[in-house]
Length: 252
Image (cartoon, rainbow, N blue to C red; front, side, top):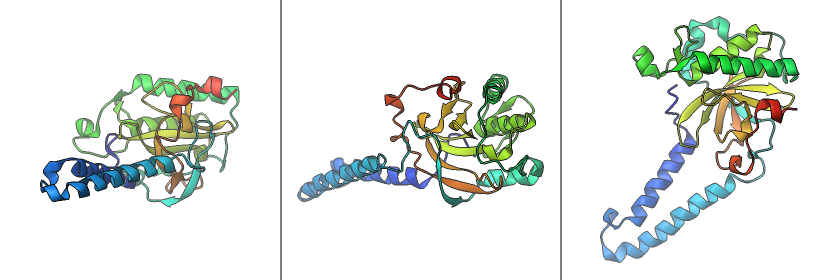
């Protein structure tokens, strides 16, 4: 996966609407004067479609800034690069520890998350797969101090498992940023909510406070299986209306 390029249905729909809107509002798309009124109507329809899409993102069932846990929609295909990673490193894709749905977030475990997130973010230099490996979409656990977003997430997951965390509570997750970039983070399922460990920030936030659009993540029951996430919307997280809270504050 390229951290700057996740192609999803959401993005394809947005691109389609934007293209239609640009054409309807630009007379150069069809210069005949008798069709100008059609373009005006088309522009209104396109704007209405975008408005409906925006409104739909705020309906019940979508992420709110105070929503603690993500809801799974059903099975999803794992990223192809993840499948390749598991083929090369099968031990990293096996269940570790008891199948645990929710990790109790004790002060010691809060400290684990803080320390691992800070350690990896400080010691790994972000580098694209093309610059690192000479090709796109390579998932790996960094061994040379360099990696991109999914590599950060995989290393954090590995280090937390070494500290005794159950793998079923540590889920690699594919998201989209507000700027439209593809991105990968580590979701940690806890008694205080689903928290995100992210190489873009040292703050550990609830998934619904990140401002990200959540697409898919590892299944808790099987690390090799993935599930789609219901309700993660850039527009519906309302991050601008609720102050971000670090884990140490949000979970106490």
